[in-house]
Length: 233
Picture 1 (cartoon, rainbow, N blue to C red):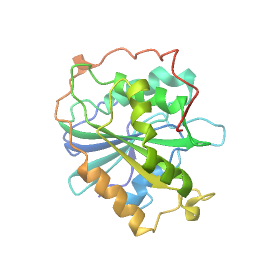
Picture 2 (picture 1 turned 90 degrees about the horizontal axis):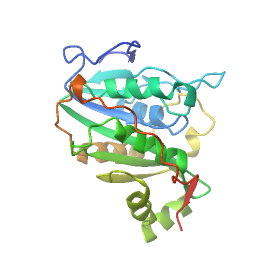
Picture 3 (picture 1 turned 120 degrees about the vertical axis):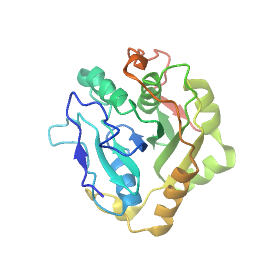
Picture 4 (picture 1 turned 90 degrees about the vertical axis):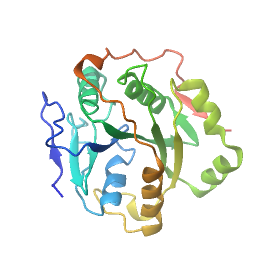
């Protein structure tokens, strides 16, 4: 296994350097992408992308393990660098024949954030519209009561159908773990939690379209009608 490496600004993913099976994680800073990736690998390969000055990591970082590349991609919270970050996201999809896309989101006061909705649609806009893509969404750091409410009423399906340009193949709800709160780059040792994530990733189908440079499209502008917050009840 290689240590977490960072791709330079002008990089295009090299099939000879990175395994042809790739799992890409996307989400805004603070959503828990790095923690989830480290939990899967059971090593602290990925670090929190938020720096002391509030900036975010500008390049993708990856780890290769047992024939699979796990990739942590830049957050989209910096509007001044958004186009650069989208290009880096597009690069993460080039020349990878078999890949899975996972979006990591959080809920705020029991609501889906408009920033998460826009992030998902921005990621999907980097994929050619004629490609039937499979992707999963993880809702992370959920309180027990909120998890029960979502499982009972399933409000997410309706929200996804209204606000997302393409529907996710599957959704995973992850509980908030007190042991990880307030801790930077701490490895999750809750094996039931890790098993749930691994099963979700394993069940998510690979997308098999081979992307080329010509497939890259210009970023799609954010929809004005996207909500700031979507209620779950």
